[in-house]
Each structure stands twice: as structure tokens, then as C-alpha cells.
Length: 385
Image 1 (cartoon, helix red, strand yellow):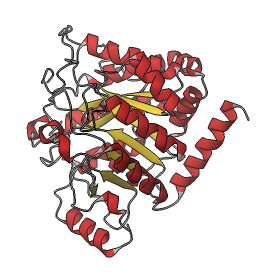
Image 2 (image 1 turned 90 degrees about the horizontal axis):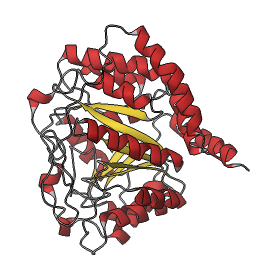
Image 3 (image 1 turned 90 degrees about the vertical axis):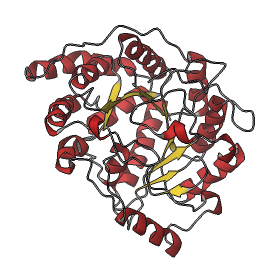
Image 4 (image 1 turned 180 degrees about the vertical axis):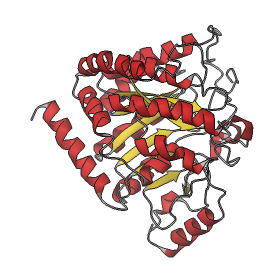
């Protein structure tokens, strides 16, 4: 069987699983809360506690449980899971993450790693590809020409290694006008782009910066442009999030407490409703998701929640399989070693979409580079905002 045929067969199996009602779909695994950045909308690095995080043998047990429980897609995130700093076992975070990717891939899971890209090198990407990584999402936090170009370069390296690259953008009141042009510029390189509206839950993931949440006009402008770009297949965010987010203004969506389409595992090993609402139930105990302890705990947390609109969780409950067919075709082309097809399609489709929306400012307007780099020797030093 050729690699292309294998990719198609594997993708169809994944799709069939997603089509089942109330299917357990996406697990997010917070490998560490360490991060070299301090973003205004993120609380994670402020809660970093090395000794409370799981040893690698414990994480592998958790991955086994997630796979047995029916989760097909695993996203490894942080913090910064690809940093050069050391875990409590004196293993570099990047090596720690690579081992987990390899283990989950052998179990048949589709594995994604989310990173700010600051510590990523071509060699590390090659190691992740060898481990079986299928997807990487680079988060753009510093809106400069240098930062964007670096993530584009890393994404193209990933695509050459048959890893689907995505550059993730956070839609805030400060970035709303820039998002369409940045997204179109990324897509024009044959790279997927995703967007998540800034959250202001003020809990264990997001800060309570209510001023950063884009207003209705800003959301309509940015998400409307992305909805058109979605036609190219190079926007990874699904149509339901892009078109319906405004109906939940301000971040007022509530998940279904009776189902488990998504689940979050914290850096300390707790099984959580999401990155914001956490429990004291240890994933190492391999809890029964149909058992009364989890069901009652989740119900209480959801009913007392003041809501959010995190993209990944919303999409897990609200998949849009028909709308995502072009995106799946782009991803499958990259997985099968044909990124050049995606580039040609981008060369054709992105200019047409831009011409159809003359009300959008597609001119890329980013400030000059700040010429700052992460300190490889002192990973706890804050260098970015």
C-alpha cells in the first residue's frame, strides 16, 4: 500500500469516528506549564510548578488511558512543550514531548503539538516527524515581520517533513484589524491558519483581561474575512465557530456536561472539563468516564461556570465535516508528501478570495522586528510579552 493510499484510508477511519454522535474526539494534554513567554491573555506560566508535574512514565499511562477511552486526536501543549529547559527528571521538555508523540502515534492516535516555535529547529522537527507527529500548530504571539516570517519558515520545514503546519492567531481587540491580512499571507504560503477569540475567563488558563476581548464589530470583520478564506481549505478553524461565535458574544458558550467529546488533562495529571475548569480527579487512577464521580463533578463545574468560547472545545462538540472537506484535502496532500499541490492551490485561490472582499484591508502591516530571542540557558527568564 502506498503512503498516499495509507493516508487516505487512515483519514477516512478518523472521519468515520468523528461522524458518530457523542463520539469522544479530542484530548488536550498539558505537558507542562513552563513557558518563556508572558502573554497578556494567558495565565498558564504563572502557575508553573515543576515538582507537581508528571514523570514521563506517568504521562504514557495517561495516554494509554485516553486511547482506550476512545479519544482519537491528542494535542500536546503547555506552557511550551518544546522548550530546552529540563523536567524534574532532567529530561529536556522537547525530548519529553517527542517520546510522548512516539508512544501516542504507535497507539494509532493523530497527534498534534502546539508550540510558540521559539525553541524549534529543523533537527527537532525531523525528530518529531520520525516519532510520527502528524500536525504542529505554531502560535503567533509577537506581531512583527520577523516573528511571522520565522513561523512561516518553520511551517514550510514541517510541511516538507509531511507534518501538517498551522499558524494559530489569537483574536483580540488589539489584533482584530490585522488578522485578515496576516491569515491571508499565511494561507498564501500553503500553510493552514487558525484563530481563537481571546478568552477572559480569569481561571487557570486565561486571564481576566476583559478589555482584550474584541467587540462585535471587530469579530464580524475578522471572522467574516476568515469565513471567506475558509473556502480555500487553508483555514483550519471550522465554519461553525467562524459564523456562530458572534451569537455567543461575549464568550458565552456552555459545553454539554452529559457528554465527553473533549477532555483536558492538566500538567499535574488531573482530568478536567477543560483548561479553565479543573478537578482533583487523577487521570492516573484511570477514572470511569461513565461513573458517578466524574459525571457529577463535571455537571457541577459546567453548571457553575461563567462560560467561554475556546475554539478547540467548541469545535469538538460542533464538528463541520462538510465544511472541512477542503481543509482535509489540504492536510492529506501534505501528509502524503505533496505540499507543492497545496502551494499551487493557494496561488490560485487566495488572490480570488481577496478580490472578492474589497471591504477588507488585506495589506500586511506589521511593525519592525524587536530583535529578541529566548534565553536557551535560562528558560525561566521572561523575555516576551
